[in-house]
Length: 280
Image (cartoon, rainbow, N blue to C red):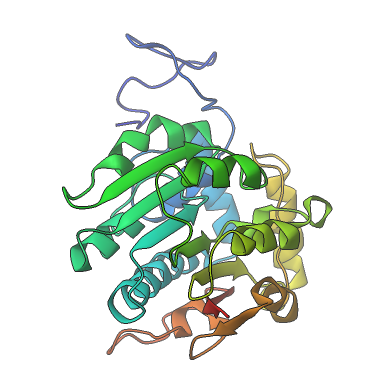
């Protein structure tokens, strides 16, 4: 429990009875904001205040968080049940929540192996929750920045057989990597490390799905947060991440329109371009 009502942090980041916390609770954190939007408890007053401010800028933000989570679940189900994938590398995973990659995949194929990677100390503090695997499968966690592909791939190779088809998951993470850090090269290096028949799943904030005022407002808000970056991209720019792959139907579409479950309607606009593709 990390609510303010239970052992709330003091101004210096110390929780009564527990000593200094291993992370800053006075500045909003994107992982904790996402947790708040999904109804989680691993968030603090600063995160909730920033989220409420963001909702005034982008009223569909809560829908986008749910749509992204639902896309992840559908993508992992497709990759496990239809594409036969038994290895996943989930990058920028965020705070554990219901419907995580390993939960979805191992419910279908208990022998599935899943490796998570994130550099956020908030996520690291909750990593144990990610490591509960089926007896037949395996879960692993790598403490590394997405841009440090060398470390990620070296550590992943200890847990997964990268000569076998592997699904790379990049859900709502690439839009916090600015152009200066060359996110296209990051994705290309990850794809180069896995064989043909592997898959890439991406959801990404769409610059052409948000109004300019919304983009400006979100950028201004991000500049006051721990991760001071937001880089929405157009559909054409997001498509560039899939170079050398073949898109699975229905292609690159808003998250809520990627193979929606029967009976689910468009209750909002996620503003997230999403797709799954197979490496040729």
